[in-house]
Length: 142
Image (cartoon, rainbow, N blue to C red; front, top):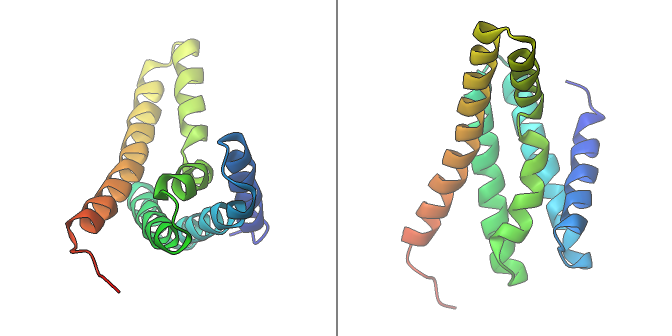
């Protein structure tokens, strides 16, 4: 695990936060969430957890962070989540899928495509699982 990858994930998340019009003072929360998710993914992968399970847990932790931060900052959770998810998207696998597809290596392309689909599904399931749990919990009044 390269230690510089985590701050890079924070910078990437903040940059996409700017692209997605996250208010200026809220960008730090996008950056922290992106770094937290990437660190989770890196640590789990380092200890031998498979890719799609690592991505599932990383996205679930990011969704929890986004929901909690959204309550504290009184701003919608997707603002903290969408930009932060960018560093864990399996872009390399998607690129390899298209590359092998264009080269005519259908078996390898199929393998890469299925891997990318499963990992992307892990992101979606992690976010949906946490968001659903948050919606099902009763509101706590002060």
